[in-house]
Image (cartoon, rainbow, N blue to C red; front, side, top):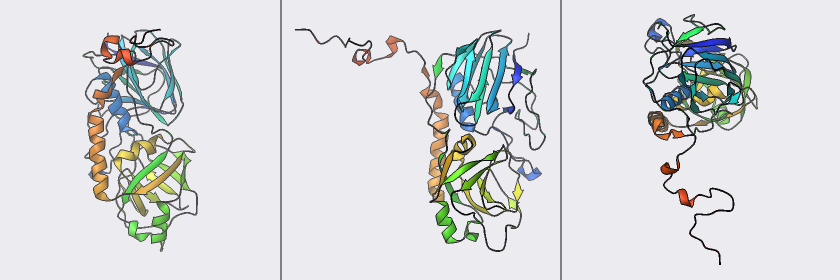
Length: 337
């Protein structure tokens, strides 16, 4: 029998996502892929396997079952998850026994949760990737009743967790100048790096709208500029003057002026900002951005070193006697008099 993850109930925004399809922009196809690529790397680290594909869950997960015993990892935006009714730790790896029911409910923070499986998903590739590019019509959302093929698992630990930095409630986004930054007045550029913004209800895999606390942004002579190449992270100004941060499935060319570009390391924070979250932008230089990006890539490459057991064996705690194990007891090197 083939290894499968059975989807008994699918949330409204369920799709398979990997690192996307680089190299197709010449043909008008953006890279696509996971909205939060850091969550993909976290799932890879927890399962101790090469980068692959995860089930991206926007807002809510679903009900799942494994055709065989299967390792799973839960990453990205925390969601309410249970296994046969028992709560599961998020940002952790677990055993999903054959026939057990995995329930993943709504997010408790953030926007996109991820379910990775030991062995990785083994669905057919389209243009070199399994990810669904919904805007371009490549692939489709995962529906209730689907049976997703899973590859052979070389094995590894479960019952482990990964500490992650908070990125699920907005925060500061670092930006660099874009090709049209100089078209905006100096006053607008300065205000952009000083005032606050609120994540709008309008957001999808193409982009995220953020509303400024003050008046809108614009350039003299209207909104239209010569259409040219754009990429995820670019911040366009549309008709109402509210910034629109382009995301994984953005178009490949555009004619709206771009005030700035969010650096790749901060795109997971944009993707995970829920409606109503507060955001600010901070200008940095290109050299600073390159340094941050290098650190971000190192961080993802070293995530596997930060995985730790949920319950540590006493023999793995070198300073065990320095811990207060039970209230009223100490390390034993003090005596009553």
